[in-house]
Length: 153
View 1 (cartoon, rainbow, N blue to C red):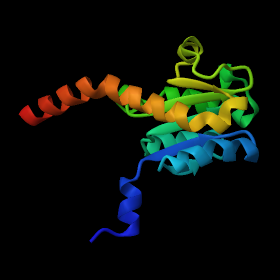
View 2: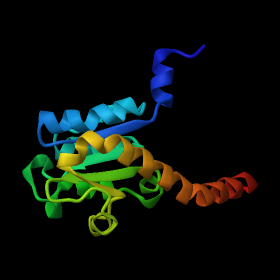
View 3: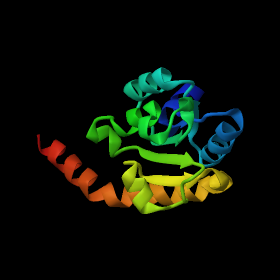
């Protein structure tokens, strides 16, 4: 029989790193609505520890988290700096006041999967839904091949 804690282990998880409570709420609510178990990153060291101990399916980082610019954002650096195998399993979103939602070049510049303007955070749910679906479709052949190779071993 499956317990509530077993279900929590099977539930996809998300990490939110926000600079203030309002932004945190705007990031966390759409994730919860999509069925993610949301955890909050409190400060850079907390985020680093969480990313080392758990693979999150979605990580949303505020460009101003921990009062730094995106060029030296320690939470963002941790999220995109995880080992490649882990990075392929997580969808990283950077949110900021000067970003344009779904700007693929901006996402590339920041080494994230998607960017979202702070003003568009109320529309974060479809951004994540579309992005995660695209990522799963993109990596499906790799996952299938990796599983087949592991079965041979």
